Image 1 (spheres, rainbow, N blue to C red):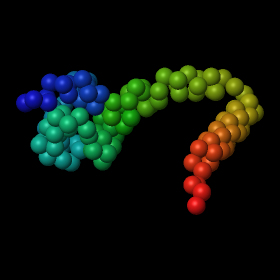
Image 2 (image 1 turned 90 degrees about the horizontal axis):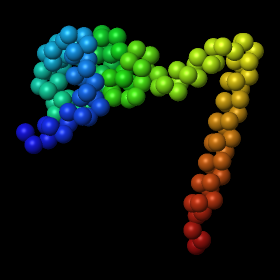
Image 3 (image 1 turned 180 degrees about the vertical axis):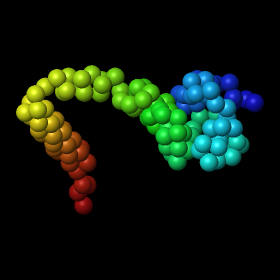
Image 4 (image 1 turned 180 degrees about the horizontal axis):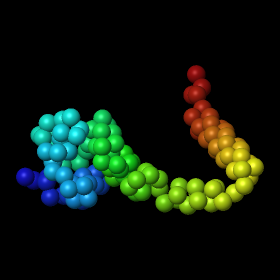
Length: 130
């Protein structure tokens, strides 16, 4: 098959292969868990895509995060990116009052960014004069 070899490095295919190795399951077992046909699982490996419902069922049954299964650079169990893990570890070191202050600061910063983007878009996409 022409497209088969280049798909091996696709993130979702790598994770599916890793999942089979880690959990000691076959493609047929994946199909049973996801409630799909074995042909559907073969198509995942050919196309490099897993449907949302199937990914949810596999992640729940096999104890991995959906984000990890879908090939994102996150922790297998938590689904958090390395920077999110670092942020959470730092956040947990703060006293409760400072945690609340940090949440307020994040909300304020997000609003500032939203306002900036809205202002930028208004300036860039002016309605044409008639």
